[in-house]
Length: 104
Figure 1 (cartoon, one colour):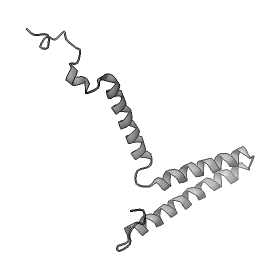
Figure 2 (tube, rainbow, N blue to C red; figure 1 turned 180 degrees about the horizontal axis):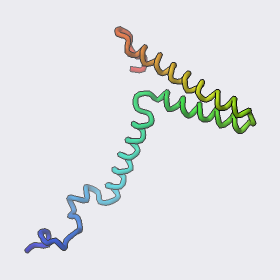
Figure 3 (spheres, rainbow, N blue to C red; figure 1 turned 90 degrees about the vertical axis):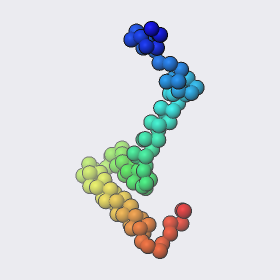
Figure 4 (tube, rainbow, N blue to C red; figure 1 turned 135 degrees about the horizontal axis):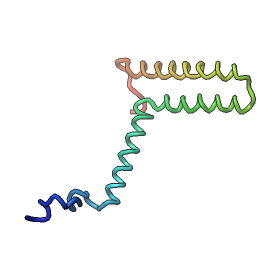
């Protein structure tokens, strides 16, 4: 019986490793992982990611500056609602027939 058919042979053959060897496989895996996170976090609305980072950064600056906790707790929801409103307006402007997105 050939070594490929024996149950003791657990090593993958050259075609199973992919072209370029294990380094290429790791590189492709890292690229796929990065593309997944980019699509998950940014997707079609990068303004939401930027807005969330700005809102959390503003809250952190308020906490660091010694602002009253009630101000920080009250300002974060206001920032989030503002970001969502801007994103909604931008989405509606994109969806209106006859209007084209200037970025395209």
